[in-house]
Image (tube, rainbow, N blue to C red; front, side, top):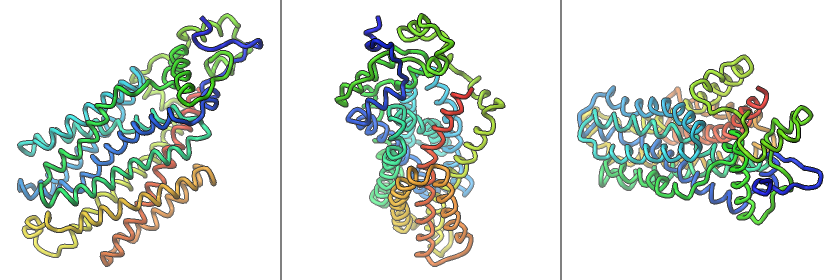
Amino acid sequence: MNNEIGDNDENGHEYTLDEALAEVGFGKFQVLVLVYAGLGSMAEAMEVMILSFIGPSVKSEWGLSSGQESLITTVVFAGMLIGAYSWGIISDNYGRRIGLLSVAAVTSIFSLLSAFAPNYISLVVCRTVAGIGLGGGPLYSAWFLEFVPVQNRGIWMVVFSTFWTIGAILEAALAWTVMPRLGWRWLLALSSVPCFAALIFYFLTIESPRYLYMNGMINEAYNVLKKMAEINGRELPSGLLVSDKVIENEEMTSSEETQLLSTGRNKNAISKPGFSSLLMLFSPSLVKTTLLLWMIYFGNSFSYYGVVLLTSEFSSGEIKCSSAILNSHILKDSSLYIDAFVTSLAELPGLILSAFLVDKVGRKISMLITYLCGFMFLLPLMFHHYKIWTTALLFGARMFIIGNFTVAGVYCPEVSHLSSLLL
């Protein structure tokens, strides 16, 4: 039975998941995982960026009010709020792969259906459900990071974030090409292609070893680690793969109990969480961490998506004419697409900056620097500027905000994992 999970050495050596991942290293296996997770991230970025383009076009075609136009965007974020909690619970209860499948299916189907919406109400409903799917976007990064050794997470999270930037740039270029010629329906349809690609290639995914490990499925976790080691041309440590808690409490655990833990499902492992896991976030030991992490993501999300939407608003505002004339010519004006494309390019230097800072100066100092610089670029936008200065300010703000978002993507999971171990 022991041979299914490891080879006992004479000293009965025990090792944890993080120790196993360190031995496996970052290799071909993780690159394959990165490609799929990156595809999902790219698809999410394209669906979010599309919000900058379809509103004015739909408003013009269907004669919508400004409130109705805004609702098309608002419902997507409302759906993302619902999805962010729902997909987390599903992936914790049923596994990361089930979560990934559900997210890809919901997002792709309803993103495509949005292109065929016959009226305003059906479009709002489709965009709401698509937003629920988009709320599961963080599953891609969480799934990817659970295959990555601790010492490599900083730089590879930055590399992973590059896929989001590629998606944002592609969407701006796609809108620039498609919207003036084919209209918003074609843009919605073509933008859903990466979502369907994530759904089609789902069968190539594998369950996260950390999910298996944290739920006591040590045998299954070992098999995944063994496959990773084979593909990377490495070897697992000799001995037994055991729970972190067994290592920490070794003096209180008998050898017989350790053997049972290593060869079967851990009866004392963390039970599958449901809504009670949400309540746990507000326990005395976690409430401070929970609120601080919420503040970080609230600030990043508010700023990032605010800049994306401000780009379309400022670009539309450049046309000094009545709203009727604006609506009839908005598709012919290229300033929106140019500005969206240029500001999307800002994410590339932002990623390079975060890659330099995240391991050189640390996570917290990196976030402090990028928050401060992002604020300095956003503040002048309160006042009117020439178009070139407005675009430059949006460029700088987006560069630092995406840098902060990337560093937070490394920092927050690490803090959350540490807090869970202290429970």
